[in-house]
Amino acid sequence: MKALSILVLDDESVICDACRLVLGEKGHAVDHRLTGKSGLLAIERGTYDLILLDMKLPDMDGMEILKTVREKVPAACVIVMTGYSTMSNALQAMKLGAADYLAKPFTDDELVEAVEKLFAYQ
Amino acid sequence: MTSSTKFENYFHVFRDIIRAMHSSTSLKEVLNVVVTKSADVLDAKGALLRILNKETNQFDVRAAWGLGERYLSKGPVTTEKLLSDPTELHKVKIITDIWHAPRVEYPQEAWNEGIRMMIDVPLAVKEQMVGLIRIYITEQRGFTDDELDFIITVAEQCACIIQRVQLMENQQARFDHLASQMDKMSSLGRMAAGIAHEINNPLAGILLYSSNMSKKVSPESSLGEGLNIIIQETQRCKTIIQGLLEFARDREPQMVLANVNDIMEKALGIVDNEFRLRHVTKNVQLAGGMITTMLDGNQIEQVFINLLLNAVHAVEGNGIVTVKSAVDLEQEKVRVEISDNGCGVAENDIKKIFEPFYSTKNKGTGLGLAVSYGIVKNHQGDIRVFSMPGKITRFTVELPIRTQNFNTRGDHESAQHPGP
Image (cartoon, each protein chain N blue to C red):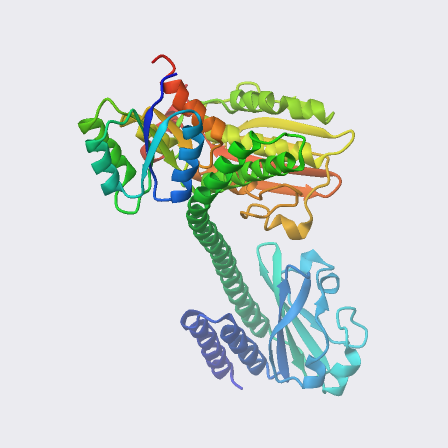
């Protein structure tokens, strides 16, 4: 599997760091941002293969960010993460174009599997 | 006293009583007027009004007039003495020999008060005795039909108002209980959802780091063991929180026409392993000709699984879990019962059993029944428990028979009972 360029967008730095550790060990390049605004800016400027997006950010709603990403950078895949794991949340995110869904808390294996499944054929 | 002044007297007393009944919201005030006026009109020394306390099955004094403290301090009267003869439910009983009447419990005290005669007037509604007025007279004398008629009429009115007030009090108590229950449930749910969300973030950090680290050490090392425990316990927290969110989520059921028998079969299939592992016998009696009704199959399945697992976990060796279903066309309900012969629920616990976080299981989250309760209520159904510890514990789920959604009930009755 090719090395991916990944952005983690979560206001909890411990989660950003943990994702960077786990995915970095698999050879991926991981960036992170803690707010919706700075995240969107990074997404528009950078070339990310994948965005790990927390649905609840202090300044913006995750669904809104997801919509913007789908419009402006349709090539980027989005995996949605949230602590409020309900089926309707997941469905809504998938409808808006998220590629997958991770309910917090998740293990390193679950994270790696979700990422690798998306890029298995690339 | 001439007969016309006597009549006038009755009329005034009667008017006072009726006025009290209509103007006063307090039962106590009405009863006070009744004892005072009825003693007054019969030239009695005093009167005592007792009302049946259904919980203790005793007649408690609720109003008294004209009697000494010493006499009043005597305890309540047992029902057997007063209800010995049901044919006298609507009759006035005149006691001329207070020393030898079985229903007079304290003749010496009565005699000391100067009482020589008593009149018992039952307060009865239909065939039910709700209370009794006893009037105390200081000299032996006869009573005219008018006097007895009067006192019976007062008693009848009084019995009706007692029953009406009791009914209102019951309804109020029931409503208060329900309201506080709903309030408690919903505020707990909201709080739980907030906490769950806040806790999932730190848990995510713990789980990601610990699962990542555990791969870097030997699983046999003490470090590896410790990390595995951290992972397992974090997963446990995740399960608890998911249950919490499930409870807090006040989701609308996705109603489709479904058969509770099919749902039960599915639920039984899912918990089958648990039955076999614990050697628990299944006794399934599903009703033939089960009617389909509007319900959310996934949610109801969850309720059945919760109840089945509770039953399986409650029984020990030689446990039997019985599952029954039935159609009640008269009440337009389908009914499912899950009973077991396990440890049961103590009387004190029954009230709390559907509250969130209440559990008797070592590893229970206390959410299974709370979630089930919420689901059944969202279906406008009913969930009840009956338990005789050590013998039988039965959970009953009743769901209304609906062929359309709740808000569009429409002509479901004609769909249910097709004409000839």
